[in-house]
Image (tube, rainbow, N blue to C red):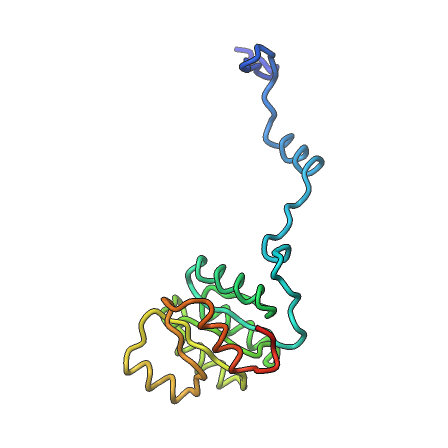
Length: 176
C-alpha cells in the first residue's frame, strides 16, 4: 500500500484551489508577518510608568482577580508582580526581602493560605505593608490578622478605587 505524499488540496469559496498550510509553516508565517500586539495596559492613555521603588506583590489563586489587580495598579503607576499561591509568593519575598513595599493577598489559596503567607513572610524578615484582599473574613481571621500586623483588609466586592485609596494612605508620596 502506498501513500500519497502530495499535500491535500481544498476548494475555497471563489473556486481557487489551495493547499492547506501545515502547522509548522503557520508558525513561521506568523512570526514573519505579524508583530507582537501592543500591551493594552501600557498603551492605555491613563498609564504612567511605575514610580521607582514602590513595588506591589499581588497574591490570589484566581487569574481574573490577579489580572484586575495588576491592570488597576499599573494604571495607577505601581510596579506589580503576581503569584497564584502562597508558596510562590513566599519564594518571591524570600528571594529579596526588600523588593516589595506592599503585599496584597487573598486568604483562601491552595498550598499556603494568606495567613500562612503573612506569618512566614514576617518570620523571614518582611517589614513592608500587607493588605488582605479577601471575599469573607471571619472574626477569628480578623484577630489573627491583627496579631500579624496587617495594615488593611479590603473586601473583594469593593471597587478598585477603594483599594487604591488604601494604597495611597499606606504610601502618601505616590500618585494615585
